[in-house]
Image 1 (cartoon, helix red, strand yellow):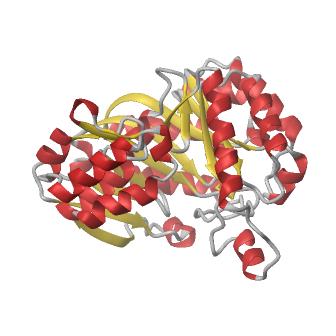
Image 2 (cartoon, rainbow, N blue to C red):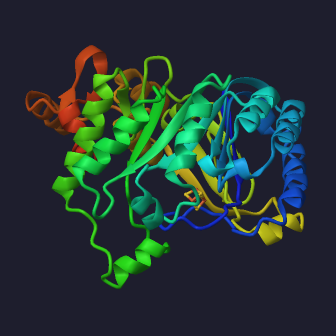
Length: 380
Ligand code: SF4
């Protein structure tokens, strides 16, 4: 089983925190869709079409800058080329692009899940993030989503913004919960070097919140969502039972995924092989539009040791964790006595759960995930 990630590299404007690949000019969308379809066609009868495709994810960029007809064309082409048995087809969208009609059209062409970039309802913070939408647009799109025929949707929130008080965050959460969303992704603001925020930080004009404030923000998110039955299943992801994202879970489980479009990432681990490959399509729209979409960059070969370390990192960020059979059978890896002693100690401290032959972090442990993962790897 595998997933398809489709990168649509257009945005109306650059959000201040974002380091994804995108361009802000809009006049090449049609040409882009043509090339995109050619790239999909080029995968016909390759190793990528041998496996069933279980999930499709339109990310970016802002996929909702394409119209429903264009999305439909892409999906039709995928159906032609791949062995499609999709259980989930997600499209990222921004509130300022969405209308009831658009959602209904997306539903008709096969989209089953929306991922809505709300981030906050606070007008000042929206400006700080340089988002293209307003609070009113976010409220309207959430109302539209709650009555759309889509099977599910998720809403992105960003906490830990400079100047954001606990009250402001609580207000954001309460407004959002008023719409009864099935899934929420909540991220702590990260300051990436090549972004507008990164530059302000370098110049000393931006002071990020202290770690204890971030921890308070995180606790507030977790507890408010839990109160209404939206449970954490990964560090940044929360869902009502049965609404966990399938596509993202595939990344954490090391399932294969193929990226299409400039800047898209792929991961492929052929069955029975002792190594996997990860690569990125060159993030260059100009070259892409001139038919140069086969350009791979950052090709990385991962051996079993790299893979097991990565899997521990990904799995221990989820509440499900990882079982020892998977470690043994898929990664040929067994924990040594030092690692076992360390984990027993962490279990005594209430940070690790070792029941039923599996390894996962408790709520207390998830707060220091990176530290625990580093310790396990270092002791290996
Ligand atoms: S956060 Fe989304 S909308 Fe904003 S610049 Fe990045 S990709 Fe575009």
